[in-house]
Image (tube, rainbow, N blue to C red; front, side, top):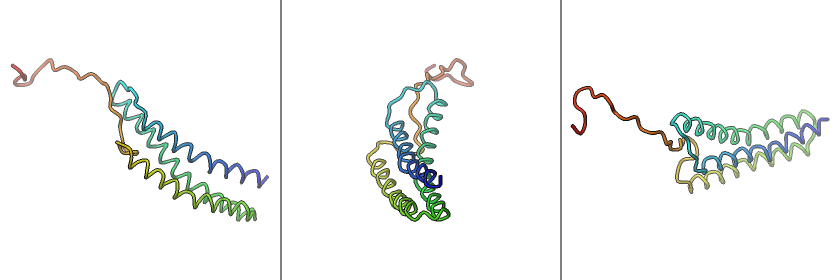
Length: 130
């Protein structure tokens, strides 16, 4: 049972964290149509959350795996998790290269909205244009 749990944690680390980052990259580079500014901000916030969770998981899950492998006295799984922890900076380097090639920042970007501007119907002092 210990080995199965460590295996599930290892494959979640190796496939889950990069999956979240790839989904966030796809969301960031997709041209979407959002009718309002609020919808655009919600879309950007969700994408940022995916990036942050993916990056945190690529470090936190291997550290958890190392601790559990030591507690379960499984040195083989411990070496696998150390390798996954070493691979986390490589994932960050790939993400940095991708972000340097992007036209917008990967975290904190809000896509443009297509909200129709509200026409001015009442002016306080002078109306522009007469």
